[in-house]
Image 1: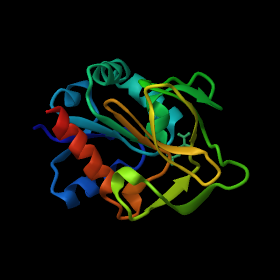
Image 2 (image 1 turned 180 degrees about the horizontal axis):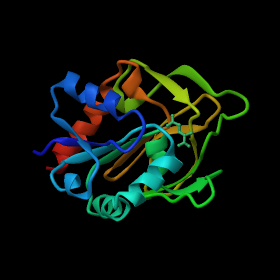
Image 3 (image 1 turned 90 degrees about the horizontal axis):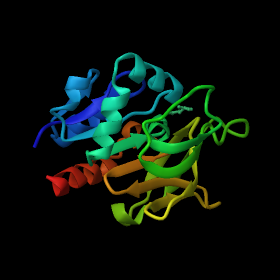
Length: 195
Ligand code: GLN
């Protein structure tokens, strides 16, 4: 099994690399198209999706990333990474594009003016009985999902914040900054199941 890649154009890729390191899972930065060829899965980190989009096009990664998603590579997006994986984005920055693949509509900065960032505990049944402590930072929410999408978690008010569809996994929040490892372990299981 090849290493897990972490898209390292922008954002909190170091935190994801550190989680994998803590789990004893080989992980590498992905910055060039050829880096994608040797990874068994890919994490797209949090950051700013419009900047990540620009950089991915500048570095010739946009098409290779789309091809990787289409070929079934397991990909996990956190926050901006989830936006990058979404087929449709509300409140996108002018001209912003995505890799897509996830049959969802997300809204950027969905908690915007009310609240920039907050923390809460979420029930995520696929990860076990202990709640997941989730940090939301200028986070998106998933406003609607297509038929093939499984909702893994929602806030008490029903807003969807964790989703899965085939090879894709996405969270509005950042497990990589709280010491939470179960999402990364769940993702590694997805990679192993495919291999
Ligand atoms: N607001 C950012 C965006 O639109 C996402 C923030 C984050 O990744 N923490 O891309």
